[in-house]
Image 1 (tube, rainbow, N blue to C red):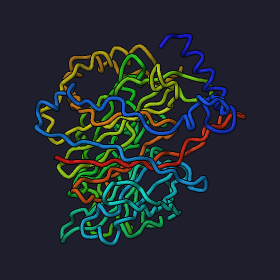
Image 2: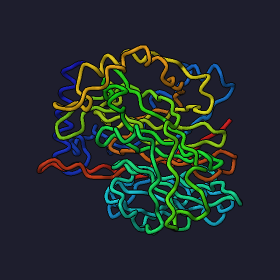
Image 3: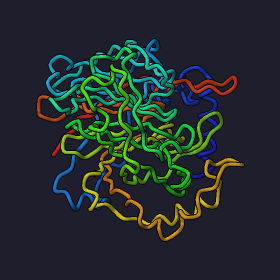
Length: 440
């Protein structure tokens, strides 16, 4: 797109944001103006042929967009994580339409009843209601549930990730009111996360044995934050649930969970470069790992969420502030990972302060040493779906119920906060997004 056109579109966006509604500066009385500039989602790049994964697997999961479901203005703000309660084996008939959600302000918990058409995967109705709070939590971003193995069977559990701290919380799945939640240990390196770039992603493996989590943005020693020129490295940890559950029901007792091993294993996940244009009052272009979702075969879906204004193309000037990409990764079979050089990240990290501001500590010089080559490899990833989502800031994701044809529902939830800077305020949409997921 020509620079002049981009400037005009940016100007139109600013005008639209400062006025009521979502007209993006379009004249509502103009017959040529779109009825709803934000309507629909554009699937940009569904192609997976570029990845080495496609050559090593005869079949891949596929995602078919079903549609969005808007929540009312009265719905809670800041819904940043979602988990289907029916993912708990044996309890699916009881909890087939029930979901647990977390809010990124004050550690609040919510429950939702979401009706889904079992033929199409479309959301037919949704009601979200408060369900308590986790005492001591500040910024809940992810939630996962399932049946975890213990000595004499399994115990249904809920886990939640807290970006402040950071922390991981756990409780028995039947106790969501708040008092029974216990803080679990997290790997020591994650305590060095940059502000507001800590634990967003959280997923529990289908067998309940591994709790997957990752930092949203890179640690200072792993390089700078993503820009339009380069991506970034984040750490994907697989934490053994057995180390958290010495006895059934520990989350309701006074017994403290044991400490993690001194050096829990992790793999690097490489974020894409940021995309989009920076505009006044809105976040600068940024890309981060917002969520993980465990598949039955042990692989993971990873949700990357990128801020930045972009249009749908030269022939369609409607704009989007968010782009999401859903990738497939296989952390359990790292021998097939793409071993990439860390030199570009080391060189860039050493040339700037660790947190991007003055007075902060520099990354250790050893980052650029030969020892860096011995660090864990970067996991290969396969693009499954990418699209523009307007002002819907999707950052929570869960595997939902099975549909009539054997496919599964994949649900995303948008963080419907309001961005406030001075006298300026901008509302993000409160919505769910559903896909039909076909597994190989």
